[in-house]
Structures are given as C-alpha cells and as structure tokens.
Amino acid sequence: MYETYEAIITRLTTQSVPFMIHEHRPSYTVADAEEHLLFPLERLPKTIAFKLKAGGYILAAVRGPDRIDYRKLAAACGTKRADVVRLTPEEVVAVFGVEVGSVSPIPLQGGVEVFFDTQVPTHETVFCGIGRADRTLEIQLIELVKITQGHVWPLINDGT
Image 1 (tube, rainbow, N blue to C red):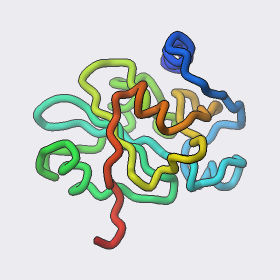
Image 2 (image 1 turned 90 degrees about the vertical axis):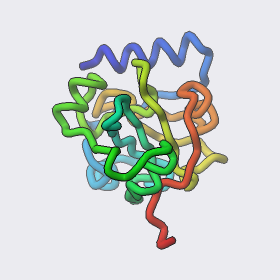
Image 3 (image 1 turned 135 degrees about the vertical axis):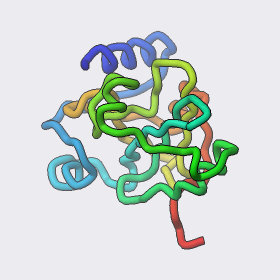
C-alpha cells in the first residue's frame, strides 16, 4: 500500500509543491488523531471517498470534526443525492490503494473530482492523509486545490 504514498510524494516533488511529512503512530480516525497526534483538528481535513452512480469518484475533504452534507456534496457535483455513494473500506483499498483513515485528497488516477469544504482553513497549512496511516502531509490548501484541480465548496451541514 505504500506505493500510493511514494507516488504522491513524487508528484508533489516533481511539481515543486512545498510540503512537509510528519511521521507518527498509525492514526485511522479523527478520535485517534485527537488522542495521539498534535495537529489541531480544525486544520486536519479528513478525506472521504465516494462514487457516482453515473461513473467516476469524488474525494471530499472537511475539517476533522465536521460531517459532510450529502445533498451539498451532490449539488457541488451537479447531481442528485441518491447518485452519490460512500465507498466501503474495501472499495477505498481497491480504488485508491490506501486504507481508510489515510485517504489523501490527491488522487493518482483520472475520473476523480476533489472538493474541499469552505471551512477548511486557507490562511494556515493543513494536515491531511497521504496514503499511510503513520504519515501526515502538511501543505497549504491553495497548493492542494492547484495540484488536484479541486473545488472549494460548502459541503458540511451547518444548520442551513
């Protein structure tokens, strides 16, 4: 599974993207991160993988404590809520080559749309998955948006 990690590092390095890698004990959930890691949760976007019934995949990154509003995610993709399905852990491994909990917002394959919630901080670095549960990528959100050709969109349930 470390091939994905190495490939993302190579992509970032080849494209001269500034970043830092943090090594730590394996962390698979936001609760793990909160208990064992030193990264502030509001700067720790978790990336969740979805598939579209019409074909293609979505990676959606929101701050650790936040929950994705599936209707808002579907609207961002220009589709209906019923057409967006969260991948199972087995599908995450098969499609993205990573374990759940280490999904990176940087896809290596085509056919993947990437979205970042508007609440993910833009003025500080963020800490996100990079394909290994024992590594975390520190990077500016603007760099993530550029390298992924991603979109910043309201994705969380904020009471509206």
